[in-house]
Amino acid sequence: MPEIQARKIRMTLRRTTHLHETTVSFDDRKINYAEGPDGGPPLLFIHGISGRWQDWGSVVDDFADEWHVYAVDLRGHGKSSWVENGYHWRKYALDQVAFVEGVIRKPAVVVGHSLGGVTALGLTSERPDLVRAVVYEDPPLFVHQRWEGNEFRNSFTATLEVLDTGPDFETLVAHVKESNPILEDDRCRDRAEKLIAMDPDVFRSTLSGRSRSNWRVEDLLQSARSPGLLLQAEPSLGAALFDDEAAKAMDLLPDAEYEKWDDSGHGMHSSFPDRFSERVQRFFKPYRNGRS
Image (cartoon, rainbow, N blue to C red; front, top):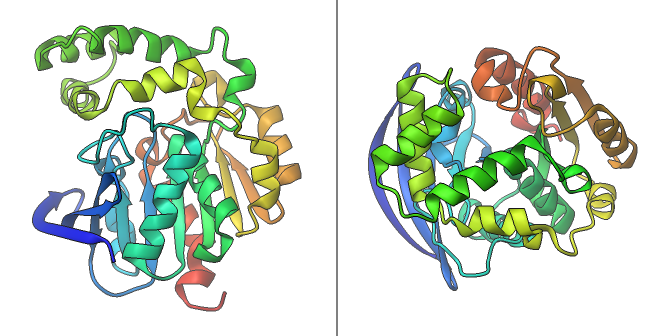
């Protein structure tokens, strides 16, 4: 049985939700997460690269009335453990296998954004019995096939160069602001806080290709038997998934719905929280009511 240490926090969003922020130990690493309220079927949120569980703050209250929400910090992110040479996409997924088995202890519905969507794919491919249904929010499924000159690659490279200097917080805030001049000051500071908490090797593994070595996305898509909803953002606004890639994924996924938002960039749930919550709730409704 995993070792769990809990502390209660107060999370202020559009309404006020009380969650328990908790750390669970699995072998050589600890995974930090938040959960609550008690009751309802389990729903697991998985954030994207350089994020943390709080990234779901714009939508989590919309689910709290009817679901038992879990939101994790991926390894190397937030308050979870940094793991030397440990940032392979399959290892992120295996952490979630252990988390569902050891903490949730029953099959869950899953929402994953970006790297979290890739992780959700790995989870349901490894253990479809643990995933009742899954939402893939603009996952970078085939980004390795167009890595040269990719805007994510350029951004990660620039940020890693700053992180490797051991910057203080204000220096990192200034870098975020320079990289994203239209970003509001409070969001720049939030972004800098997440970067300070992240192991720089997360970016290093991504940039070098170590994170996706022997990761055969086509095989994983075909093995993802849990019902899915693939949400794609608009490529001209910074999507991680292009139109031809989304079509390819839908050809391979055994059981999935698809929707593209032409007016949204990569962060669909943060840009359009009400629309996101409504669409995901509609997709998950059969699983909330226990009919599937």
